[in-house]
Length: 617
Image (cartoon, rainbow, N blue to C red; front, side, top):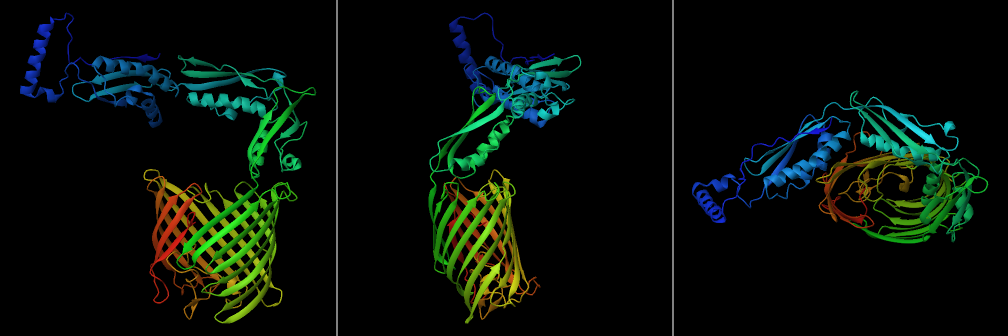
C-alpha cells in the first residue's frame, strides 16, 4: 500500500553511450564554450560538465501544517539544500533516499497508504525539487490491549486506553502510542509493582479496514510493600527531621509517586545540595522493599550584600546573614541591616518549620528603625509573631499578632503611638523567576486592624492590594510586557488621626518613577503628608539587545489621596522613562531614568535616577 513513484522530467543533457576519442571530445568542449561566450547561453543556466546543481525544495499536497513541518524536518534533501550536488543524477539519488523517511513520517501520523512522488525541474538554476504527497485517509486506532504476565496478573486492575492517553476512533499517531507505552510501567509502579517492565509492543495494521490495533506486553513482577527507609549522608540535620518528610509508612503498599514526592519535599527544604531516593533491587525476607535516601547537605550559612542608588534617597546598602539549620531541624535565623541617607534599620527573624503541621511555620520577627524622610522624621520598633501556611506551591497565607512603637515628627508636631494589630496576608506567586520574571503573575493582599493601647480613640483598618502580571509577547525580537496595579485603603479614622508612618504615600523608584520618594499625593507647605488611600498603575516593555544587555520603556501613574476613596479632586500624576538592564548570574542590574510628565514647579526635579538589583517589579 505504501508506494513511491519517481517521475523525472526529460533530462536536459543527453549522455552518449559510446564515448568519442579524447581529441574530438576536447574540440567539442572548446567549440561549446566559444558558442556560450558569443550567444550568452552560459548565463542562461545551461549546465556544463563540472558545474554544480543548487536547488530548493517544496512539499505539496493536502497536508496539515504540523505534518508538512515534520516532512520538511526529516528530509535530508531539505537539510542539505545549501550544499549543491555535482550532477543531476546525484540530486536524484539524494531525493530518492528521502522517500523512505517521508513515508515513515507519514505513517507516524496514521497515513499508512500514503504515496510520495518526487519531481525535479532543472530547466534553470536553482533547480526545484518537489515532493508531491498523497496522504490518503488516516488509519484509525480501533483497539488497545495490555497483556500482562506475573504474580496475580489476573487480579491487577489495568488502565483503560484513555488512562494512558489513547483515544479510540481517532488517527493512530505513533507519538500517542509511544507515550501510552511509557505510561504503563509508571502506572503499575504506583499500584505496588516496583519491578514492572514493558516488553515488545505489537502493532497490527489492517489495510482493508484502514484501522490499527496495538497490544502492549508487560511483566508485572512481584508486588511489594515499603520497607524501612535508610538515611545516609546526614551531618548536622537531625534524622527525625528527614523522617517527618517521608510520605509513606513502613508496610504501606509500594507507590513510586511517593518516592518522588519525598524527594521533592526534601529538596524544597533548602538544606540539601543533592537528594536521591532509591529502592533495593529485591524484596527482603518479609516481602518489603528497602528504600535508601542519600543526602548531601549544603552549607547552612549565607551572607548577602547589596547596594542601590536613587536620586531622591541617595546611596543605600543592605547586608544580611542567615542560618537555615539553627537547631538541626531546618530552623531559620536571619539578621539584616539597611543603611541609606534617609533610613537606618535592623531586623531579626526566626522561623520554625513544620509548626503543628508539615505545611505550616511559626515566625518571630523584631525590627528597629530610624528614618528621615521629606514626609516625616520617625523612629520606632515592631515585634511580630505570625503563623504561615502554604496552601500550595504558589499560595501562602499568613496571620499574626504584632506590637509597634513609633514616634514621628511631621511639620513640627511630634506624636508617639503604641499599636497592637493583627496582620493577615495572602500571597499567590506563579511567576517563573524572583528577580527577572517573564511569565506568570504575583498577587499580594494585606489586611490589618490597628488599635492604640494608650489612646482608645485611635483605631483604624488598613488594606492593601497589589497584582503584577508578566507575559512574553514575542521571541524575535524578545519582548516581555509587565504590568502592575496597586490599591490601598485605610478606614476608621481621619487622615490626621492616623500615624504618619502608617499612611499611604506614592512616588519613587518602587512606585511612580520620575518623582521623589513619597512626594505624589497631599502636600502641606510643599511637604508630603500622606493619605488614606492609594492608587498605582505601571507598565513596562522589556527587550533584550543581547544576552547581557536589555532595554526597558516604562510608564508609571498614581497618587495617594486624603480620603479613603479617591474623590477625583486629586490629580493622578504620570512618569515615564527608559531603563537599562545588565544581566548577571544573580539577576539583572537595573538602571532607570525617569522624568515626570506632570512636573510641579519648585517640587519635582526634571530627572530621577534609580540603580538596584532586579526588575522594578
